[in-house]
Amino acid sequence: SLRDAAGIASESLPRPASLAALYEELRARHGLPLARERLRVAIDGAFCGWDAPVPENAEVAFIPPVSGG
Image (tube, rainbow, N blue to C red):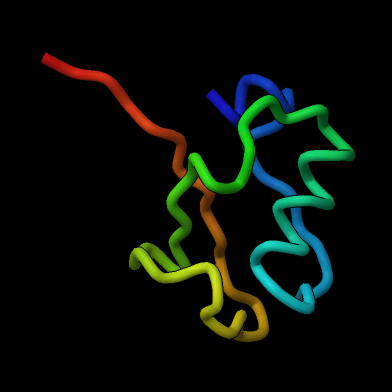
């Protein structure tokens, strides 16, 4: 849903100071609807905490809650 809200599938950016700063930048840039507290975050395909360091050239994904049944 975040990808749809942003209107793009991916984006390359300079390494951020933190994951929280990255998400807030993207949220402001693309008008993303979800607060950071509602999301999980992953670096290079592995879930991590919001305080994890961001390696150079890492792929970061913000994962919204999903419903299922």
